[in-house]
Image 1 (tube, rainbow, N blue to C red):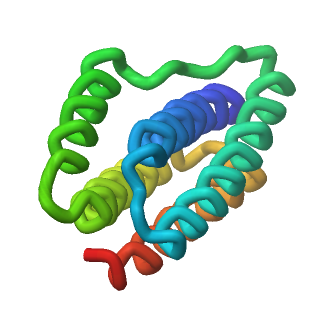
Image 2 (cartoon, helix red, strand yellow; image 1 turned 30 degrees about the vertical axis):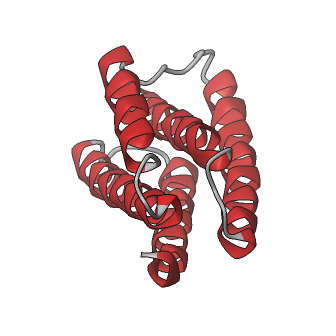
Length: 143
């Protein structure tokens, strides 16, 4: 069903934008080169996935959805707080891990909420979930 596909794509698109924004917010505070590399690679992957979701949304003649302004503001405040401590890399890894957890839970909820979405859209959603799970695992050495 087109409606479920568009709704699922909108949520994917907003979540990816949120992830990119969160990575951008912390990059200037990263001290460890390994962590910086992981975040840079993840940023690039998120940008590609964002392009993919945007292309699919365009096929449905939809512009997508921006993350909720309050969620963005709260994430920005949290990233500022987490990077001020004695070990900013640990705070960044914790923040990114929390963001991945939220993204994974939300995307599974949306997959269940929009069961009539096109298989290609569901596949892209699963690819985003897999990406979040890998990023979450890659943060563990820095916690």
